[in-house]
Length: 125
Image: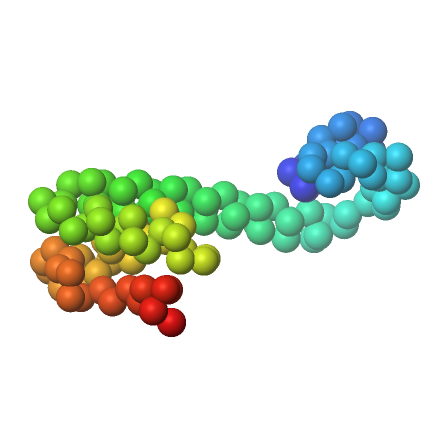
């Protein structure tokens, strides 16, 4: 929808058809909300913001792929084990665990060894 607005789509109905997620349930109200037009300056700013968002998404994908390669290519079996130990921590997950482990590898110019990452046993708390 934002791309259509930035491109100055003239028909609000066409923009409404692009609604996804929670906006789908609001389709009846969307045409009224989309009747006002963006100024050329607002369209320019929106276009630039969407371009930055696309750049960040591409960079995130590249970094994620690199982290996966570093973890998978490690000769140290603890690297994969460290990822599995970090994943269940709330807010971590697989991607963040891979980044933590691969960045630890890069900063030490070696592989992660068991004593470099301390993971508390939740049953001992």
